[in-house]
Length: 228
Ligand code: SF4
Image (cartoon, rainbow, N blue to C red; front, side):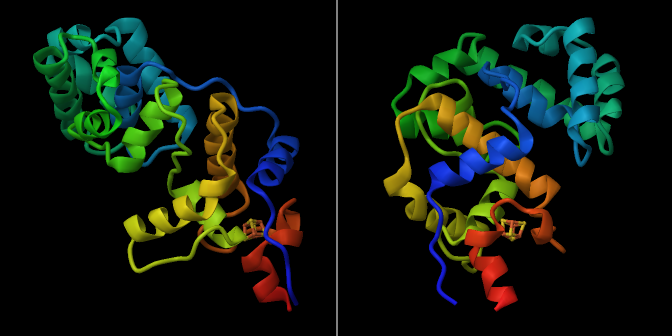
């Protein structure tokens, strides 16, 4: 059976009806890096609890984190799951990079030309190219549709791009697949990132996606290839 791939706009409209309008995300680049490194393999609620406790008791500026003792930081990284000592080191290293290279304020990195800004952000622990692009999007620096692994999986299954041998190539394929549909609209792109992630975590899971409950099923390549 032939099916027509939905537009990205339609996908986001349906996901907004399904999940509601997402909450405003963090928009400070260093705080996003702290968010990524404060926890590991935990849900957003637990990550948020560790992040908020750190913000309340230590602060979120690079100098706050750099000045705190390891035992203090580990108290919060422990709230964020396994390997708390490693994540203490990563937080400390992140703070040091900002202090040494960006005059204590990572927003200075966002003033660089795009390729240099991505390179600067990729120096930080746990920040690869998708993570750097997410920072550029959430800080409203560059209108890029950054995707996490959940969003990537959803768009691949819907037929935007094709699964390739490795993650980087699949990411590139999806980015090419959506290129003509992107608009210079930060609100839309940020919501798209958040909703695609939420859909990948809620219904379009890696194993056994809940296609029967999915508002996108009628136009989904993966679903239709399994059903007919
Ligand atoms: S129909 Fe299934 S595979 Fe397609 S987007 Fe929905 S949950 Fe994912």
